[in-house]
Amino acid sequence: MARVRDRDPAAFESLYDGFHRLVYAIAQRMLGDPMAAEDLTQAVFLKLWANPGSFHGGNFGAWIARVARNRALDVIRARGARPEGEFPEDLGSDDDLDDTVLAKLDGERVRAALAELPEEQRQLIELGFFAGVTHEEIARSTGTPLGTVKTRIRSGLRKLREALKTSAA
Image 1 (cartoon, one colour):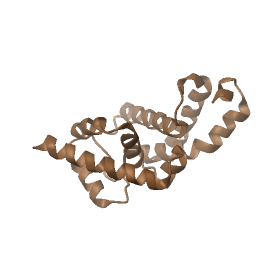
Image 2 (cartoon, helix red, strand yellow):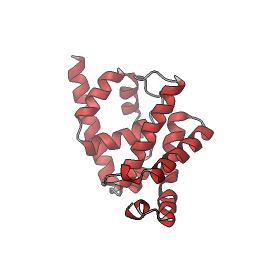
Image 3 (cartoon, helix red, strand yellow):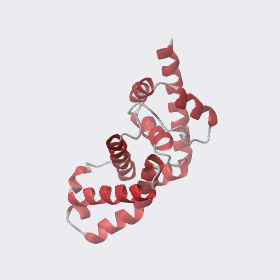
Image 4 (spheres, helix red, strand yellow):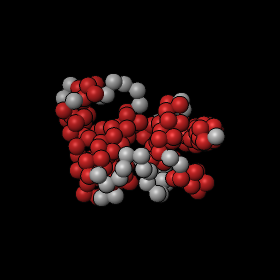
């Protein structure tokens, strides 16, 4: 990113090559439209080129995934395609029970419970469930070992279930 901040086109191309598939996958999953996903991917990288200072450090893969997710949510809101508190029916997890639990819960309760999770767990759950990124893609993009990704997601889901049981009582 330091080279991108210095306006090095080769560094920008390298970032694009390494992360455009992740951004596109998130956009496609959330928007369900290949053309809109391509537009969103282009917009995210144009924003990065225009304002490289928006990345303040940390894990670039996780950061760009969050930027893509937020931009996709903006598109969805602008379309009025999905009310803010509604989640996709197919949340994309290896565990059907987790899908069922999350799909049926009230969105506000889920967001509140997610906000209480440690960042390392919340971020991975958001990528896996709400952005449709596979565990392998999360591991690759965040530089976290696959086993660690799975463990953090599983631990986070347990905490999430407990928090949601408590808030429902």
